Length: 372
Ligand code: ADP
Ligand code: MG
Image 1 (cartoon, rainbow, N blue to C red):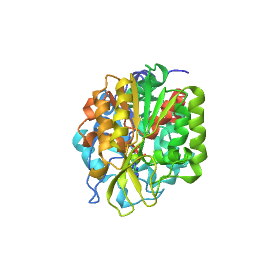
Image 2: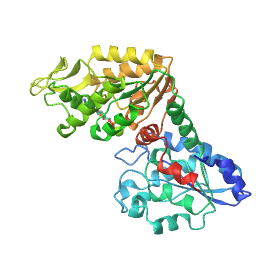
Image 3: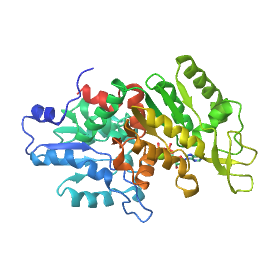
Image 4: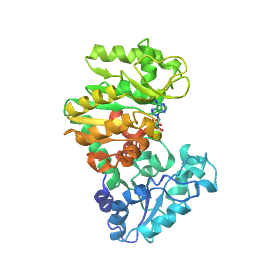
């Protein structure tokens, strides 16, 4: 695999950056309040090392990002105006294009939209790790036309996540949870080749319960994925790897009251969190690991009654001596809520992108830069 060009390589390719117009694909997909204000500007701040490096060398920087899911047409709800105002405070003089996803050509990777993006542009930088697993116009298009490089944020993410994949310290444990079950089942299959043990919590565990012949009541589950889960459990056994599932669950009973269950839930019961016994068992696995990757909360942590499984796992991530990486919007938000975000080795800005990079060792956005 050839090297991915860095900012220094872009500078060499262009001779001198002074006066050059550089398009920077950033991930300014910030959480927004209903009143249109920015909840957290960490994604804007995360792009500053790259932006400042370029402006210090006299480049004129034009940034571009998506925000939300506006479905290929302009929608004032997803206007970049609030982001542009904050960016003007943090990096005066830096331009920001309108929401890339106001044009269907972005997700459709249309050649005409790529041409529009690179008009008058001398060079391109991808610093949008969180979008680099998508073959969208602004990610894969420009490197085919102008000298291109990865920005500092992307460089750091790639170094950390490929480090996990290529130089694992064992035991290497993946902790998976969250709600997007079918999205993540494919990841489990690929992760079995990379990690030694997988810990499963969140809504995901219930489809596995069904695969083990247990009952899940009215908990979130995907009946059409039960066979896939059976296959994964069998494959893990065959490979000599362990999949840890919860053996107790917290949730609500048929009357809607807070309740604790074993791993068999009666009719009308709903599991919203791993139970205290499972949280303790998962803590042991994390404490004994030398590398841990965590994606997806252990329960519906937004409700304080069902936050303790996620809090316990977050605390174990903070306490273990292992090298710890957390990826995923909700997982990172949970860590921040428990004020433990400074206690892990790396918080990734990309959920889907970090999983895919672990899984495949590459991303469409990186392949595009390598070909540039
Ligand atoms: P991430 O953003 O970290 O990748 P996901 O988006 O996959 O994570 O999942 C996060 C969501 O999963 C949270 O909103 C949480 O409330 C929900 N969740 C976790 N466990 C359960 C459960 N047992 N039942 C319902 N929702 C759950
Ligand atoms: Mg999420």
